[in-house]
Image 1 (cartoon, rainbow, N blue to C red):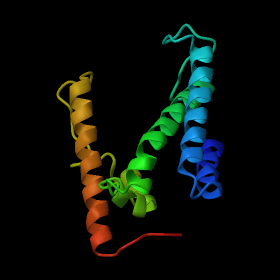
Image 2: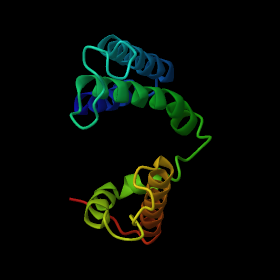
Image 3: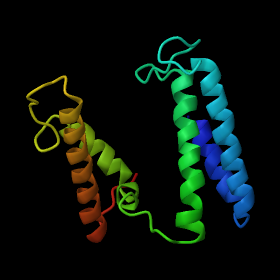
Amino acid sequence: MAFLGVQAGKILLYYKDQTKVILIRFAAWCCILGLISIALTKVSTNEGFIPINKNLWSISYVTTLSSFAFLILLVLYPVVDVKRLWTGAPFFYPGMNSILVYVGHEVFENYFPFQWKLEDNQSHKEHLTQNIVATALWVLIAYILYRKKIFWKI
């Protein structure tokens, strides 16, 4: 996964002013990784050669996730970096303080308001609501820190 992130960064740096070339390469990586995922999973939940397993970070999970990441880059690169139609907010703010957001999440993940006792632990709706609230709070915290020019870096 890290290699593919480095690959995306190298594409952006090496082909800096060649938007078409960048988009072609993002599309190629997206398709190649998507086809590998299709071959590994046989487009099924558990019947493929290597099923997608997030907990084990199976190769099919990595290729599927990376394929979608390149797809998102393919869509957002022209919108954010080329035509400047969108600043990337609110995703920009957590990215400016990513270490603090990560450490903060790990330290406070079991405390209110980031997590609370669910009425029905099997309910996807309650889990989704809890995760949306926690994510929104971390984005808000990152925004406030950004406005106060507080950045945690190594």
